[in-house]
Image 1 (cartoon, helix red, strand yellow):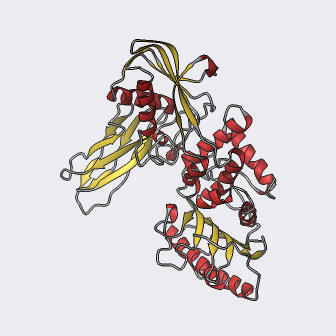
Image 2 (spheres, one colour):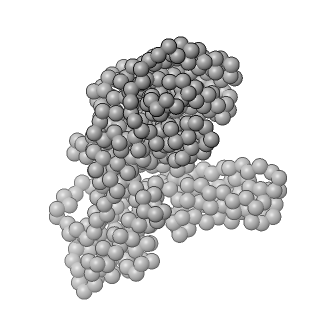
Image 3 (tube, helix red, strand yellow):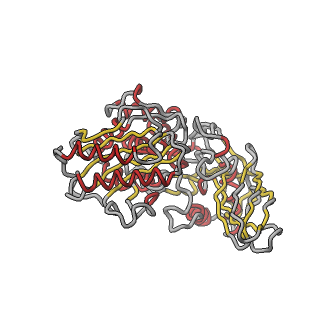
Length: 473
């Protein structure tokens, strides 16, 4: 972890270090790509740079801007509260009337913060239904998602990503990242069909068309999963070598319906009988007119934000961006309004709109652009914020956690660098904070665009640059 955020005084090594970095790039097969590097001390002094004033695609380094704006707008102690409301009367142990679950925009109704128990929030709410005295419900179950707009994706996401966990639909009422978790096992012989199972409880909310094939054990695994857009029919066409096991989280359509369908199934498993329809709902309602039956409160935002930077979670990012708009402005949460608030935050921190472009908040959109000059200065500015500790704690630690858990192991950077990774086709980025060999703290941003080599080749050059900074600054 970082310690001793002390300023680094520029010294005579600057030109020598810059020359080394140039040589690393020029002597690699990635030299034809666009490289941008910016390094600062904690006072904001620019120590060295390469093409730092070029607009460049940042990939998931976009989340560094987004997460800071969300923390600043909502506060690290902010929590989501998901309520169950009743519209009816209790007779004996039967609720006669409708039940409403009001989506709060909480992205964390999954197992991430609850000891890997995806049903933690559901079970808590169901227990509260039972404690209210309800064992049977005769009425419809509404899933209200009116806090957010009805546009499921931000601008710029590509259609062939939309079947997977990293590009799910966004809804104010969401469960398990709006995905089902598929397990495929090639237990039979070559020519047989692999077996499948999925969470939650092999739900019939989705339909899997299993056209997969087991191949001989020496044949490579070839993944092919595709949800027919606008439906919950998922085509499975992978080929798996005998004995292979694959897991994949796949997105669902109509998350609010998925939420209430799963919730009612789980309630019935826990002994609550239910008669009525399942109804996704976008009506604005005055919840003061309803009876509060239960509430689930999320972990604080300072914890949730770790999913953005440490784990580079697009779903959490886009959910929290809409929530930023909804709760800051007391209006319908939209991606566009959330991004406008991010722009305003950047403007207040020396990044005017003409120096940055955001199409989404998570970095999946290929049209996102920024400059490493601005990103490194932005990271230096964030050190002055009251919530900086939560921000820094959300970064991955080299060789230890998140997207850096398997990188830099055995390197002097291990444990001495907290950073945010980024990757989309043709883009590799890494920005953050480093404690150098001499105990100085530096701020860096390294982004490579337009390369056609393997990502591992780019990563090796990034490592050479960073280890040089570690030794010589």
